[in-house]
Amino acid sequence: MIKIVKKIVHLESLLSDVRSVKKKISLVPTMGNLHKGHLSLVEKAKKISDYVVVTIFVNPTQFVEGEDFANYPRTLDSDINLLSELDVDLLFVPEVIELYPTNDNTPTIEISNPELESIHCGKYRPGHFKGVATIVSKLFSIVQPNIALFGEKDYQQLLIIRSLVKNLLLPIEVVSAPTIREDSGLAMSSRNTYLSKSEFRQAPKLYKCIKETIKMIRNGDKDYEQLEKEANIFLEQAGFKVEYYSICDSKTLAPAGDDDAIVLVAAWLGKTRLIDNARVHTYD
Ligand code: PAF
Picture (cartoon, rainbow, N blue to C red):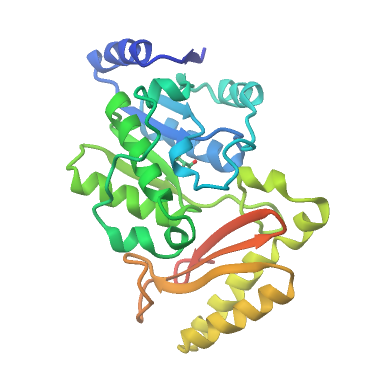
């Protein structure tokens, strides 16, 4: 049966028992309002470790001023049901004061790769990735997992966390899992609940556009700037407000060269900010 704890001391005492019998611990950090994307991470965690810890914490420091921290969907009861069905071992649901005990909600972790932090989502959400790095570092230090799992939908976040682990020499294996999509192609996201019915029907055009760009590149089109321009026009005409649409190198997120490119996009549909991505050569 799933154990649910709110306090770090209780979490640490349970985990020290688990560690003493040499079980491999995995961590799936979330902000709750769980959907199939999160559940696929949990399922993967179960396959590759002996003890699965899920955290649900809406982290204030990664929300930029004016964003949806207060309204972020909080659905703890149904999240607990979903995690119980998957037989998760431990759920950590701390209050803000538990993780930010000095009540100083400023991110404390400097990202070792400022380049990566300031482009794409970082440009439009200044400070967001510092907040993510801060909370993920805190969770790593409390849980000390052997493995930590993150979704590929937040691709830039994934790269920043990988770089954090590498730079701090943390003995944690970062494992990613592919984006889970609705039948329409729309990437699953907790924020999709903000979409109206008609926006929900419109939103899959984002992925349709990415697929079209990838098709063009695979057919030999190398004029990435032009492809980005065309995608912007398509999306604006479809009712999106595009923040960025970039064909970039999947390791550095700098403008793409010839190999291993990824298409990354962030766009608003009404009041909902959507992000999505797909790798050019491995996508099918
Ligand atoms: O991806 C998320 O849900 C959050 O950014 C994370 C990693 C749980 C940190 O708050």
